[in-house]
Length: 624
Image (cartoon, rainbow, N blue to C red):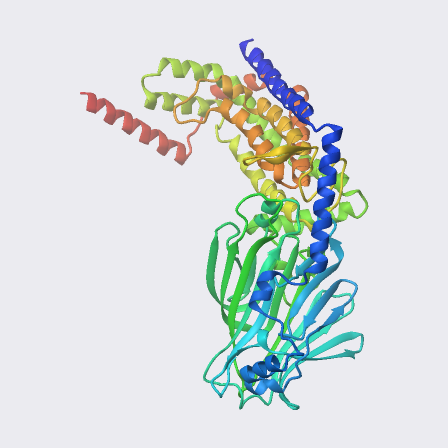
């Protein structure tokens, strides 16, 4: 009777806390006048940002690092030609060329011959701005080499002459830094229709007498990941440098450390992933080695932060007969399995963070295609609900085993309590008697843990699926505007550490569901005598919902929706098992029958019993 009273009090306490939270949020909500003032202020900020975007084409840092040559200044042009030596033959002309199809738009500048803008044609950020992977000097690609006249040049400082042509339906852009009419360094870009992948070739002609073959040609590619999501910390968590190396191994630099550096060999491709979008450089002739770095730029949640991580790659290209020839590919596009799986020969789909080992396998080959199938004919939120129901029903036999184990332990509780009281001063003897009781009754205290362990691969796979599933990006459901980001029902006038400056409803619902679920699964354990070294179940019962509430407030609403529905279904399944399937009287009768049957010890049980008996004998001998 005391147990039920405590449970009711706990439930009432939790409901009161939740009601107080809602009441506080209601009282603290802005007045209509304050809302109008906030709206006017926000509109002013947005107008200033748009004005800044239209007036500034490059960042101040980019201007300071790479000044634009004034073509009209004959002295400046003469100084440039003197600095670049033989490459001064190239016509110096500022400007750029656009390559675009229905998917991606690339701007290639004459200065440096590199991509200075990469814009997604069909995607926008959380605030409805087009998604840019390269913009305003956040990326740089160039070659550094020595010449026979003792100059050290970098292609980012050289001017290239553009020639745009067609090859069938493909657009071909040739960028040439010339030494003479027939001697040049060429960057060749070839864009196909409706394709994110752009073929990219670096080659030289007639430069075997210009390059200093005793010095290496270094390739450097640097990029600062542009923020695209509502929560910069959440986006940064799934923003990483991933690479294929050393015989198809897939590795990643740290997503959280301030700076991570590695030197790797035999590199096939490098992916500068920016959560849902990726900038990838793949090569047909693997880079022999490369120095890679990833610098974390996010210290805390911020609405002003514009970048997530800074990536750098430095590798060496080999000269063949004094000439350069390297066939590569640029990919600027979504981190979407539906897209990346089309490039099987390059294996770019492996850059998606499906998860480690068996978890990643389940995510990639089970949940991703299953959800893709459901969302092909159902609304995205409903597809999550249906998938959750099917997963929970598939795991219901495991739930049954777990609850059966709990029911058996509940039946044995009086006898275990009696043993604890009788032998409270002899821990070794108490353990022996408890194990003997379990053996006679045919009950294993570990049988309740095994079903939970069997579910871990499923839970972790889904934990990785929802935050990284491109299919959920900017798909709405009920009050959630974006299932791949957090939902918001109330904006706080301040930020709470670890929680944020907003209130998400789905984590609240998931927290309530997990609280009642834990009441059912740990309610009996709470009333049992606390064993030394064992976790406090009552503390865990209250801690888990709080952690869910705080931790998932900034996570994908689709993930919180899954946990809410999953725990709700589990509660109903366990209620059905308790009220309609399991009969505690029958379980008790079966245990009593099991006690009467002679039990044969297996080798492990026999060994454990003998070890305990020896320890008990040694203890007694020590007392004498």
